[in-house]
Image 1 (tube, helix red, strand yellow):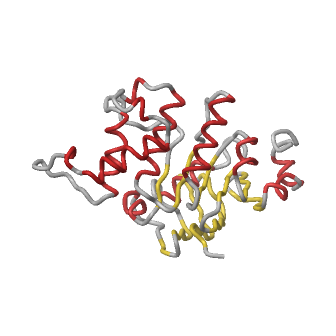
Image 2: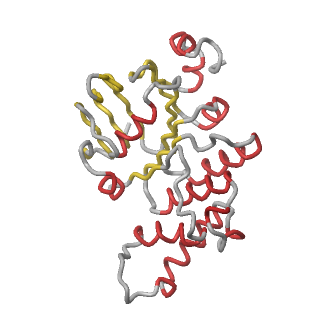
Length: 249
């Protein structure tokens, strides 16, 4: 098995409080891997460690075989990892088109230069238009992102996340706050846009997790207590105990 993400014996403490304890996680290339666990289990902290937003107290993290623990987020991004956040993170005053174009510009190797007119870059226009079509927001291209509905903003953020062409995509609660219909649409979008990529997702909606993931890891008090296929996790007594026999069934 070729791994996209490898987390080895990672610990993270804030002061005297240990949040992540002996964390070991392996995500295969091309796999859709969900991380679940009760509130306060350390799921977002795990995401922040892998994406470089916080540094581990000890242990090692590898991305596509390369050690990335200790690197800054933009350095990890340039090595092929892109992520979204729990809270929608778009440029509210910029249009939908401009939000996606910003991500595309960097991915296509263009840097800031006041003498360049970005409207004269055909590959950028083509890629931006394709992503807007993929996330079904072409008809909203000229709308300021802050005026989109919540579900549309989440779709836009997914578009921004995949715009850079990263091989590893991390989505933090992408369907939180959505209606059932919006959730179904988001799951279909995620499944389609991450085809051929590695996906790591944190999600509280168990129907999303079991319908989308190839493998699931269960995090409790900063430690993974089980990893396996959806069927293996569904029948694991430790997992049922962690969820009090409710959500997992």
